[in-house]
Length: 146
Image (cartoon, rainbow, N blue to C red; front, side, top):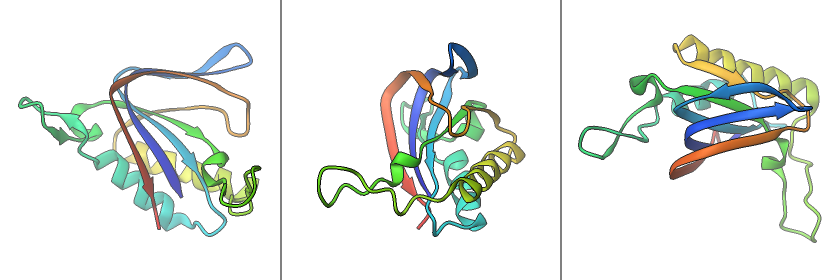
């Protein structure tokens, strides 16, 4: 599993001109699922991201997690994170999971984060989405479960 995590002041996802997910302060997580991923990968990333200390404390140091700040999370599925651009000019998606596996692990990730007490909003799986965000920092990290 691969995630691009951005600290945001706000973020939203629109599908067919309708907002389907919207948050204030928190994290925007773009999540890609690989063929080789299992439930443990979703559990690992859910725990890692919810506890990642990337919010500033009273001394302006990145020392607080999403859980500590009470922030929200917006999760957007993005299979293109598994795109391989090493050969040629057209990305290959042979490492991306199929729909059944991807949706199962995407939903498991979301459920694991919710069980930690985080308010989670989502995009719509496999939809064309417009994602808006106001970066906070900007602070962006790429995490992988492997």
